[in-house]
Length: 224
Ligand code: AP5
Ligand code: MG
Image (tube, rainbow, N blue to C red):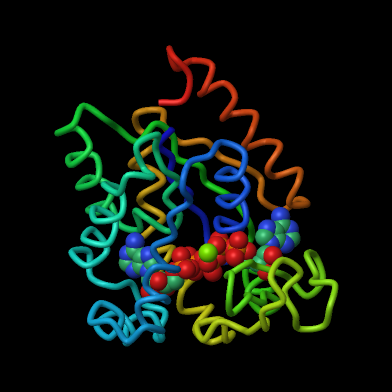
């Protein structure tokens, strides 16, 4: 199973990626999360990426490609992967296809989780993340039971530094200019599936899962 999750910042890529990963047993790879971890660790990659991410701009394509290529060759990716937040430019999409084709592989499906810009801003403003296990919450739609404490691991919840309204608006503008064309890239050969993301999390997942069950049943020998 090799999937990519597309959609505005705050659309629910991370939320759905976690659920798909849990059900189908393939790793959920978020380039944004990898970058944030590198920043927290003070790694070279993080230092280079920090200036971009804090402004709501994309990191350079070469850096994003390097992150993904290093990750998808890890042993846990043998049965596939779910990429969240990658590709974000048409160049990244083309390069990924080119790289996979060298091994006779492809991206099977791209899901576009559609929400309005207003909904995206509202979700980003009310998102909280666990500082330890990185679980994602929302102050209204998906609340932690204890105030400011993660249900899963007891870690402290925090707000992402790029989740200010100003940076979120910048991320939306950048998405429309640089990432929206990626939808057309996958649509032109029938790999794009459009999902209405303005519904409860379980309903969105039911739709995604419907497509995935078809995908899995089409694969001779099960999950590729
Ligand atoms: P990244 O971390 O990917 O951020 P993003 O694309 O802005 O997306 P988000 O993580 O904000 O939103 P999401 O769609 O995952 O939503 P979530 O599930 O959390 O990237 C960050 C930065 O890294 C970029 O700006 C860039 O600088 C850099 N970067 C990353 N990849 C790159 C690349 N390939 N190339 C270049 N640069 C790159 O949900 C949001 C909230 O809504 C949560 O609170 C959640 O609980 C809630 N929610 C989710 N679904 C629902 C629902 N159905 N109903 C109600 N609430 C919901
Ligand atoms: Mg995310």
